[in-house]
Image (tube, rainbow, N blue to C red; front, side, top):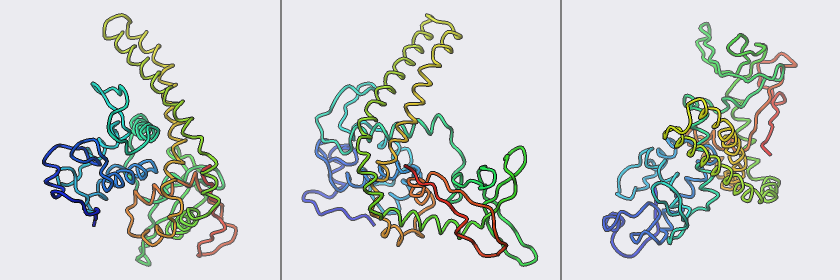
Length: 331
């Protein structure tokens, strides 16, 4: 259950009723409410690490964090506050950022750019079905290099059900079909390795040595802004009849390519920011791991793991062999 620090004055609900102050700010709309700001920053870190808006919404409600009206959170509300420039101290006019505001910022402008980039990448790449397993899309076959897929095996003779990750052959999957690994011990091994790595001084030193990421993100953000402005101009020209459809389609290819490339690069540079909220917390997370929802677990694993290679079986055994597993960590 959420516990805010004691504050003088009317209760939160009464204070909120005086003015529609945004979450994270006092009734004057200018002063940061530190209790709520800390929660907002945690939501930002977890979203950048890969956790879904839905998962974060569930977490806010389960921990009984009140909204500005004292009600429950909805995914649309969480999405809106993550996208809002206000939290980076920026003022907007008709949907466009026009300059710095007079209120205190809760996150940096670079973190705001990272948030927008992640939303844009999700929009352009399309949404898949919700993730069902911890290592989906992270495993590779050590024989052919193809991705592994989760598969459930029903043993009617023994009355048991087991889940595996398998390399699937055929035109829809393209694998060799000759490799399989039991899911449960593999997932526990990878989770333990990730949580251990979070507490290693090597990881902390590695992140400290890449502090120039913020400057790179600023440069990429300018590329995004210029490309988006060019696309807006082309759309306006087409709408005004100044160019025909074919001209519009051809002209937008180059700025769209620059936009997509810059967004991918921002997302890649954002990995360090996401990890900054996790480094050193491995022991604490290990204690709570079984109680974390799948989206949260996946976000933590993906923040560190690029992919995992599963080698072929070298000896026949019913036991899980950890030596088959090779983790490729993110740089």
